[in-house]
Image (cartoon, rainbow, N blue to C red):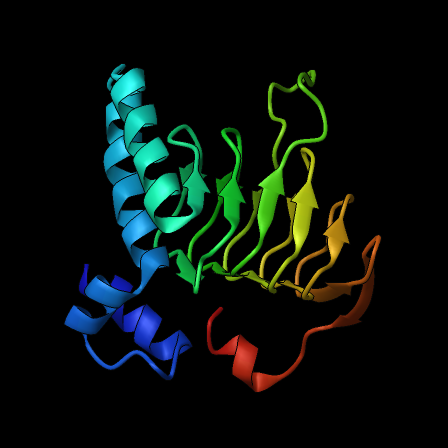
Length: 178
């Protein structure tokens, strides 16, 4: 758990200590409650898990389906309006800002996955919409308000509506998280 809080302090200069993060960061609270709901969901207690998710959505305005797969050290910064769908897969050390949707574009797919897969160390900007059974490559950045409908290669930046890949990431700052 210490590495989780250390990773938040590294990504958010306003984060001073564990108590402040636990009490005042709704994205952190939502992830903690997701972990409880996901455990219950995997144990077959789906209704209870969905009820926890409902209460979290109502209180924190962050919706994480209990069936989603989320790796270590997810940081949802600010959090308001974040939606993570049931078949979404999120890797380790991902940062998501407020208003982001990891959503589906259909009710059925041949793979059974309807939501995006976000690989390790991805940063998703405010208001981005990532839709469908696509993959966001490791170390990528998704710009604010981008609408992503296609796979994004690793270590690139995608911006726009619909999004286009703008550049390869080479700066040292982002490499510190990879």
